[in-house]
Image (cartoon, rainbow, N blue to C red):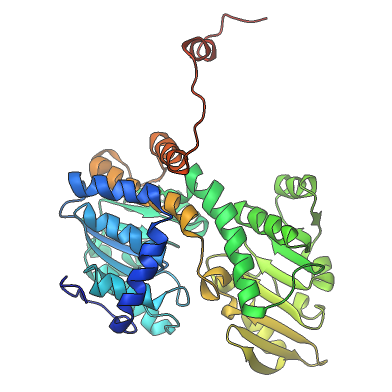
Length: 424
């Protein structure tokens, strides 16, 4: 074990730390942008003395973000943003080897999950990092006396941004939030390529089913749904898309997918995966007409996308044929298989997004924290997008790390784009 002082924590087993270090270092080799930021942070210490509470998926990639924040001078505490997404070895390594307080155990129950959220709030943060806005929600609902301590916050995911924009619209948001999810180097890559690959990975690990030839129903055609639909088609599945937005539905059609209402798709689907950020996409009336052995799962942030209580009410028997599968037997003898309790299947049954794509997402988190530390005095209690110069710098660093060169404008081209008096 490292000579670093062991931080306050609640993790599964500190003896898992050596395995966690190996896995964190393996991820780090594929996160060159974040590594460069960490090197600069260690020199410049832009977060010196700031308390940061992060509520994120506790993975090896997140561990490298925590190392970066600490290198920048921050006093960091981390808790899980989902009860099933924690990698226990990464949590142990952060505590024992890197001296970062972690409160997260894979499979923790409801009460433990919330006790961990409160442990993060008890850190009395000045900057918060959320993946789903849980910490921000607790601060506004139950710790209003701490709101004056908060300089700014960051938010990682679509679901959280939706909640925070609703708070802003209602006039209840008390501090500025930088929507990391809105950065192009986040949602165009993490949401699309990361979610697409890792969700297929989670479904296959949980079930070992062959996707080729199956009808795969994707709920939602945002960036996460697009990535999943594309990857499922790449595995040979026949993909159906569910969508309420006419423009997105039209895009799905033009991309070569079938689009239909959920009541029609429910009758023909073999595998269903929701990715909408909304609730009750799959409901009781849909479970009643699904095929025998239909597989149902979710890759959105919360498990409310599937009406699990309705499924439970319809079932006459529940069994667990595999670790991440709960089998519900209907009154007519059909089986419906729910994966990972309806939670993020890519993190609950697999390892989440590949390090290469999280490199950009967490580079955004690190630089957004630096931006918040420097500029919080000029920011209003609103939801802000990541500044364009940060977005472009992350893209530039990623291309450089990949050994890819792109063109730059000539002076003549730049002048032409900035003029109006030169035409045909």
